[in-house]
Amino acid sequence: MHENRSKIKQTIFTSAIIALLTSVALAIFCESLVQKFYPEFSSVLYLSSIIFFGGLGCAILNRKPVIGFLAVFITILIPFMHKWLVGYWDWLRQYFHGFF
Image 1 (spheres, helix red, strand yellow):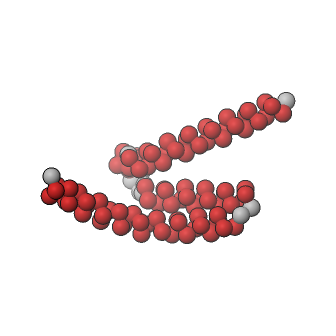
Image 2: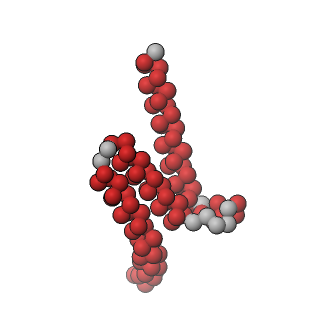
Image 3: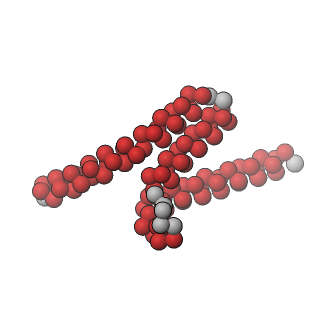
């Protein structure tokens, strides 16, 4: 009986991870498609919430407050990293077009 419970827990955990990774991939690569159905959708806000709640959940389960503080800090940094990366990729694209 105990073996069946652990298999069920493992199956639920694996399914949740697969669903989470699929939703993150859709948020990153298909943002315009998602915005057709949900116009207020923002991939930056979605990824920030995933990191925030995932980090806090991990901190609570492992009883390590450092992980919680790190999750909050990274969540605060995500909009700034997004702004920097958007500008960086435009520069990189122009650099490579000039290089080749």
